[in-house]
Length: 288
Length: 311
Picture 1: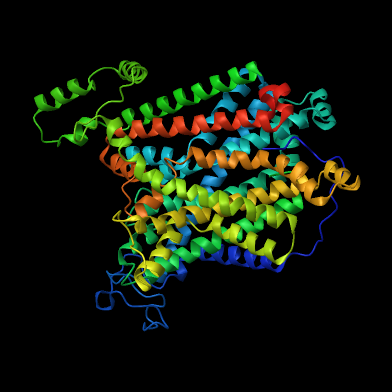
Picture 2 (picture 1 turned 45 degrees about the horizontal axis):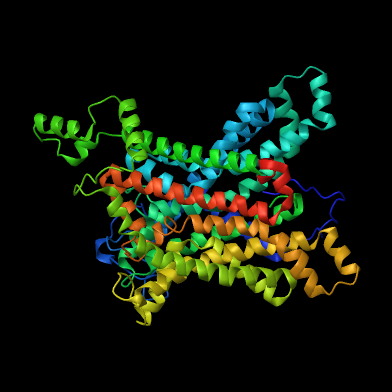
């Protein structure tokens, strides 16, 4: 919002030591990434494998057995296995969506900064539109009416948060254009594409990455919210929100179905937010 | 100021046109409503009659123009399910939704803003850390998880409160808390960072260096300046009074607009969905407009600078 008031003096350097909480957050993110990468090796059972003699088994420590560490659901499906695969799907969606949003937003922001005039007005109007509508409402209508494929779902999630990148990219590119280096490269005869890709982008990348870190947890929450409503990832596929939505039916009898994915969602969004905040404080104090 | 107002108003109207167009394109082009309402085995004449009755046999752009014309005349179509005017279906759900979202908004503002200010004024104190932890939790715990945890604790384990439905005012407690806590966290975070940014400005240092008591510096210089970004967030929250409870209403089976939307979308009840979209868009756009005008009141620089400063 207020990227206008750049401080005249550089802020004093923050201490270099990483807070313990951030280290924990990075550790958690790394663990989650590893789980997602090796999901197929880590999961003890298939996500649709039924163990009908062990339905609604509680987790170990609550009367369960080592066979199903986190218990089973009412079809006897292993909660741990479903959780591991859910982590992968939710992360793939969130990463894909954040990347799409970053690329789309940055491109539009650069276009607006380069052409100004009506192009800029159109982009600003789209930003206004996106920012003024609750995205969940838009997503709800699109999803329910176009049906549901994973590709479409990721693309739709990719429309979330592009306006933040567009706004930042536009503002920073406009100020970069006024600076010496961009003008110098332009004087040397570089084409706009080259100037923006090789000169402006590296200079503003840190800010954009921080913006991505900030919208990543929001995408995770959005995806899980939609899947919770039954409008996101569809069975037999499973995602974290999907598991919560399903586990809701067994809230009283088998709360572990719901608690396991819930805690993963919370811890992951928390970790990425902590990391994002810390990065923002370190790299770019002007970003709000 | 007039130019600023005109530009803002024009942009607001354009946003609404865009929303309507978006809704229309998505809803009409994505599938055949006749097939959804009537079964595929229905006789061809019946389907044709249905199409004719709803104007679905005409080219899309004609339907679009008709739709716009109808909206201008205040007609938002009938629900395809029970034939009642869509606007009525939506309007009769609004009180239920507001019964959740208004108390939640009061909770958000009453809890979030003071907490944020306090945290900023006592930076790095224990309360600051607590407020920030609460704020981060409010931001990272999805509403359905928080809602279900509250149900698990207060309805299932303790049996103090109902888990859903709309029997008495007690049914509203859990959904209101669910909605309010998350928003309060977000608001506290914004208020805190807005305050911190303002407190770091040279004019605060100047004011306190000239011997103005700290209390007056905060009240007279810091708070009004920190109000600007905070007002944006509150404006967004006011704008989402109608649409902000979709998930929470689903968690608690609360018969509000959000619940209606989910059901209408599942049934492809086009008129109802478009009606809600339009309603949501207008409330959002109106509250954004009010926020922009408030900017003018709060920040005299914008009055002269025109719309450029709003972004």
